[in-house]
Length: 250
Image (tube, rainbow, N blue to C red; front, top):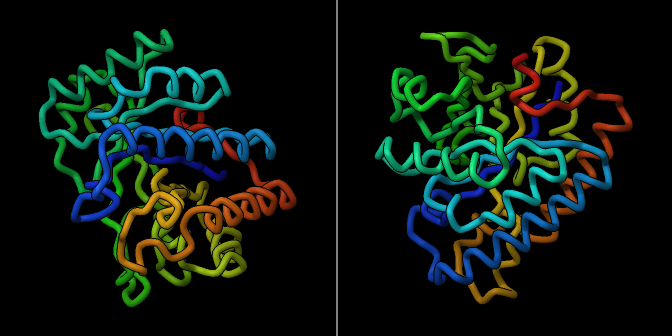
């Protein structure tokens, strides 16, 4: 099973130092990128889970409704340390689409399972910070869904052979053919592969006059969109099943 997801976050997550960009332009860029990704998903008849930053939910009512209309899942990306802000974001999602967000994601922990349960989420999808050093070391940790304190936890996937994780950095950098082989090898041993990307990776930084380090903008924008398109073609050609994260856990 392929669990495809996208993180819609502000630039603090994507870069340690903030992009020199106004909130208004950030919103326009994210909306444009997301609409493009939605067209790609529609073309391949693939659905995905969209984790939207708790700090951005109130700014994306129209976009959230569009994502949901296209049969995708809306979940929360926790960027705020305040549980009240996480709760407000969850309430806003329900206000927009009449459905509660089932999942929450954040980077490297920082939220207790008790808080997740208190907020009414049914699953937790923790991810790690983007690091190119993943290519230079072997990672070992649990990669199967498990339950703790009544919360289902979906760990990041790791290739069982290369020990490379399936995070947004790896998808951006690793040659597609190699990445596809990773997926096929992993599915021989695991029930799922969790693939996720950040919506800001689809930004054409030069056209938007945004200066970021080369290693960050490598294979971004149209190149990443083309890579996603090719990857989804590979998924369909190999009859690999895909699922929303909430549906996979049923």
